[in-house]
Image (cartoon, rainbow, N blue to C red):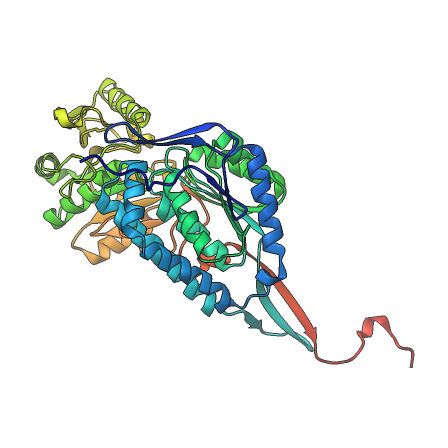
Length: 499
């Protein structure tokens, strides 16, 4: 049955609290399962961006917003959370059409977004300021204030969850937010704007600007009224944002790329490890910054473990994202699949052996989509290009290791440091290795588990700053110290008044 697309966001942009047609380049949202068109519309122009920033500046500086008590500001976040929760199925369908994700995954991401707004509503309402220890006849306070206007730049691989992780703490802190979603996945962010608009959030505090990084992204980073940029995306773009932010002395949060190692010791629960590895690299079709794309297996179990892993991989169901039993859906776009295929070709040229996958599926029903089979490659070392660079697809490289020292050295021998997974039955070993790995997150006997209450971010070229957790709201605030005299006496240095 042909899906009803009439209820997808129509393509108007949400600028300064008003819906209007954009004046920028055309944007095409395509369903990657069959290349059918979702929507084509005009994205944001530079003038649209300037209008959004101006509206945000005025709305954020309005005393009616700034003087809200924390529990009053939190009420808006609760309303947004409730709005998302009431539209889970609709959001999941839009995100699936926008990105090619399975409905199961898209549903989970929408639920996560609702939970994120609810969590930061609680953080907003319960965060306390500090009365610090005085060193004289005065009271000393440490206080936090909103930065002003925040630019949130989010990726195409999980837009609703990424949007929420930036918007919720920024609004909770009292800022205005201008959101730039990726051009490949603009619709779900526009749906989020519809939900936010219905809460009565003061107009101007939130805008959505689908558009190119060159036009809209650069404007947001360079504009003097943008007080912070929170970016999730590629490391190259993150470095460019950091350079421009340095010129402005502007704080940034950068959640960038990864080449995460996964480690299996010879004392691991093999079935537990295989299930975790499959989920860590092949869920989301490998389109995840934390995907466990480098697998290190202790040498004495390497051959038998990899054989079982290949068998398990070949049992995965690659299929249409709206079929309930699909595990591996299409990639987001045919252009992205072409990039993944290029990396696999490079691996072959470097001497890699394709143990499974390495091609598009042969199923005639999948030929129109941007599908790529889960792929495992052996025969390369950790210095090969495919082990150094982020592929962002369902491609896993398997490598042997000798002992703890060897695997720690190989795991850390990479410019990225976002995440790591390890499997062992030895608690002391797991603790030693987890502490030695240079990564923002380490999973032990599991992988790709998240909690909004636990900070997340990267090390080395994987980023700067942290999102989530109670401190996630403080990341969108500036700290101020106040001194209040309690002596009632003139400062003695002045020798005044004259006695």
